[in-house]
Image (cartoon, rainbow, N blue to C red; front, top):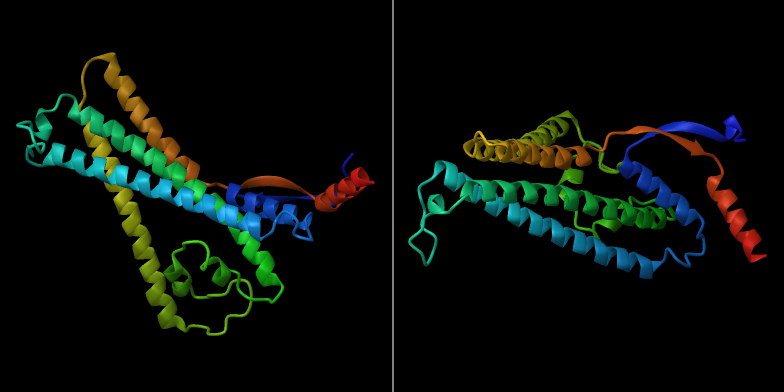
Length: 255
């Protein structure tokens, strides 16, 4: 039976849980036999692949959204090399709506996957930086593509240690406002996409049962794509000494 003193509850999101789990796994490898530069480079390669998938999904989403907007609100632009316009193509509205929904879901999954790879990589930099007490972000920025300006905008740049240059209130107010406006801008783009897909779904409205299935599938795709990136936090039971116990089992097996 587990001793209550050896455990406690901690509120964590999946991202935080992954980071802390990787940190504990690294504790089992103090000599860096596995969590070494070679493994780090492999994670870098996988992270770049995740970013490539993210960029591909973003392009698909942008092209389908533009095509859907032209179909719904623009003129009947001719398809190059033919006499057909976009509005003359059979089921063009439904096809572009499905492609836009698929692009959104693929982008949501690719973005989440890239963030998880970045979470793993950052544990390498935290371990390296802790030896000298420096900010691990400045190691991460050299290996992982990041939005560096967001760190520069923060009131406290080094959240791991001493902040050498502490900003006054005007700086905090101005750049805090910029971050809020950037967030609103991205949310506006998300809202524009949702409105476009909703208009495309409504434009294909019919009395057949297929339309109800079609609209339900489009709604479900977007709900899932948004929900998996919200990353709500839940309570986890943290077992004290789990890493030491695992290390002891490994030593016993070797013996």
